[in-house]
Image (cartoon, rainbow, N blue to C red; front, side, top):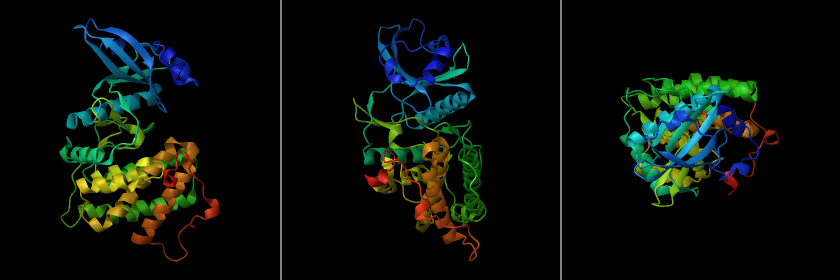
Length: 367
């Protein structure tokens, strides 16, 4: 059975499988349904960069029909992704059940070569239009306010992923220490995946030793503190949908962890998101005001966007150079403001002739 899933994962022509009802199922997740449940249809559904997805239609023992969404991924990376997303979505659903599809279970296919893992959740029929700003931002602010970290710390009880990349989310009582670990982890991965860049490493060292302790550390000095808030942690328009039936906005594909709430919208600064439109950030800030010191909000937002740009470069190697360069520019901007190099000591600035560009499809600053 797992061999069949693996062949789907490597299939280069997924359209040939659409609506055939022949998506391979497995008894391990079929046991999650009540005894007597009948599978009426199992067909590949939707698109995903690193997983295979399907819609399962069943008849329950009482005769009612129900639909579920199934996601599969192979090997150890697939295990981390499925376990992380199930726990992330479960944590979100616990706090805001009207904001995420209900996760049902995750696990391993009984037969495996290679090992294959799945995530099963309720199916909600949604369109993929850009989310309406006020509903999205009001729900997001409500999530951030209502959520309570089970440890009182920042982090998550399991590893969660942004895309296919595991995040460093071990519990930390200090947000500054947590964010340094979070960013350093993806910075190291970026060098592994996209190659070593000496000048970028020089900037990163100064960011870790000087800028983050000053800029992010200010949130936890002079009697200030911040609440660990549950964030979705990968909130771009492709991870949202609007219910055809109710008009409610839902979010999915989460890499959630407990963080400073402002971390969430650092992703919206990035040029590859349509939520880059400033109406989303402005609307969110009407629902959840900036932390103190308020005058440093935009600099914190720039710092948080560096994380999302670097992890995007890890996930999308073909677009990695352009977003690495954006991160480089943003690091230099913050260094100039909070921990400037002595004259002649810093690495060179990027020249316009050296710049790479995002694809027209991904650069939403031009639309």
